[in-house]
Amino acid sequence: MEGIVTMYQDFMKKADPRIADYPLMQSPFLVMGILLGYVYFVLSLGPRLMANRKPLNLKKFMVLYNFFLVGLSLYIVYEFLMAGWLTGYTWRCDPVDFSQDPKALRMVSVAWLFVFSKFIELTDTVIFVLRKKNEQVTFLHLFHHSVLPWSWWWGAKFGPGGMGSFHAMINSMVHVVMYFYYGLSAAGPAFQKYLWWKKHITAIQLGWANCSGKNLQHAPSSLPRNITSLDLSFNSLVMPHHRTLLKHFPSLQSLNLSSNAKLTLSPAVFSNLGALRLLDLSSCSITHIHMDTFKGLGNLHTLLLRNNSLQEFDVPFLLPLKALFHLDLQHNALVSVDPWSLQLLETVPQVLLEGNPWACDCSAHPLQQWLRRRRAVQVTCVSPPGLRGQEIAALDSQDLGCQVKQRFARELTTPQNITVTENNSKLCGFRGVHKV
Image 1 (spheres, one colour):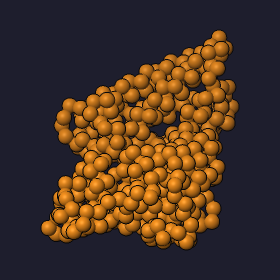
Image 2: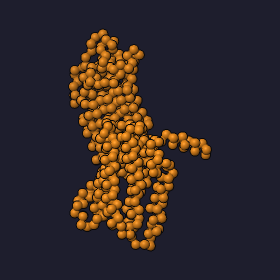
Image 3: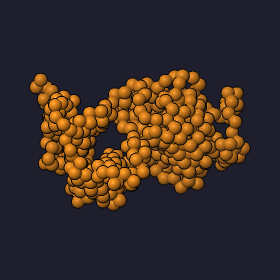
Image 4: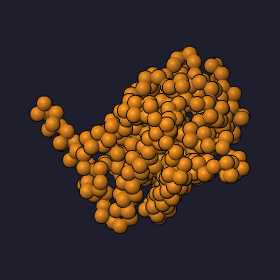
């Protein structure tokens, strides 16, 4: 027992000290007690107290409560923007600023306010119980109001700001619209004519499904069909071998599968996600990609494959991705890339290759020329030792040990000119295509 206490104390020492003095942020046990009390009241105590009582008339309170949350959510969005998202953040993977800079402290303050607002919103369910609207206390509603404040608390405790604050800002934007609708609805029949957009509220609320860090082995099967963004990162997903990963989601545009260890990508595993625009497969220990893995993703705009273990870049797996704009291959195990692959990459406007162990010999000459045309920087050599750390684009053919100046093959110009079959893949230099 003493060891567990020591482990907990050591862990909590890593928390951000700047937020320690804010209300509710001293210990997770107070928060746990509030949330457990909330669940107990909603599922047991509240219904028993109201069993022999008439529903309470809370109309005036509901109007004031909902419009108060509209104002609070607007203020939170404004503070997130002014603390970073409009004043220095890159809108990419921005890290947390742990300094005493005024903007960093402002981000800490709004991160706490966001977490605190989640506890205010527990009143939503209390209102349902006091009005005897128990049918509105669904599993999804209870899960959202009890589990998310807990997860947001830990996020603010250890990392108030950075990329994690983006989700909080989006959540607050959604709540501006949601509580504005609830406020008008509670105001009475005279305002019903202004609620023509009611049908869009559920779509906005369920547009993003967060299933990150739930220790899932299989993709959830009970999500609404109309979600547009799904986060399945930091799980232990087992990819299916002969069927698609997810059921049909006609509106899904963003899928985050990052940090699922040892993810194996089978053919056509995403083929029913035709509307997908962003696919994040970062940090999944991927070593190879089947040529048909991305079949059906003709609308994919962004493909993130960084921090994997890809040793070779194989042309065929990119062929179905006709709309690809951004490809991130940073920090893999790429040593070289052949001219045919570089020709195909010409059709992708943004390609990131930094952090790979590039071998700078004569075979890297096509890559050097490609990087020069792209004006790419920070793509550096790892071997031989004499060139380690030098930018490939800055080298010349003699540095690479080339005796004769090499040029790109000219037979291939666009992906549409490529026809890949099992026989001609070897003839055209498509190396290492994994067949399942």
